[in-house]
Image 1 (cartoon, rainbow, N blue to C red):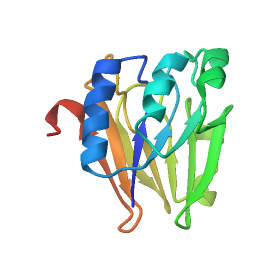
Image 2: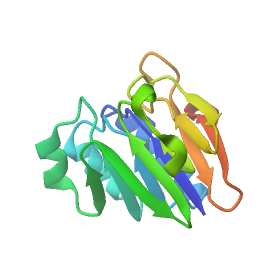
Image 3: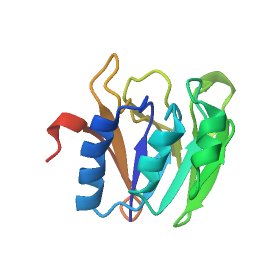
Length: 160
């Protein structure tokens, strides 16, 4: 199974539509969003394209709007902890590297800086999928294959 990981969409519907096309083609059903969707109307569009969505709030999110529109999205206030196909996955918006114990996770995702980042820390893959909005850096996201445990960063404008 493939899982898409995104962050910092900042209501950029044009980039989201390109991402949705890629996700449909790749048959991706699960989405992890590391925060800064921003508006509930944007979450409604996201929900039209995925079977399961996990979201943690970011600093630019309008919480009331997101909570009002969330129908099939599992929302976490600060940090999400989920298990998918025996993989322990954690995610948040603003990552506190100094105070985080990664030993309890196979993968840990975060956003906020908009900068795509991937690193293996002991037995945990630590990654920032970048930002789908294309603010400050190119629009990027990540794909996790749960069978192979392969985690890959993708550049939005390079996907076909």
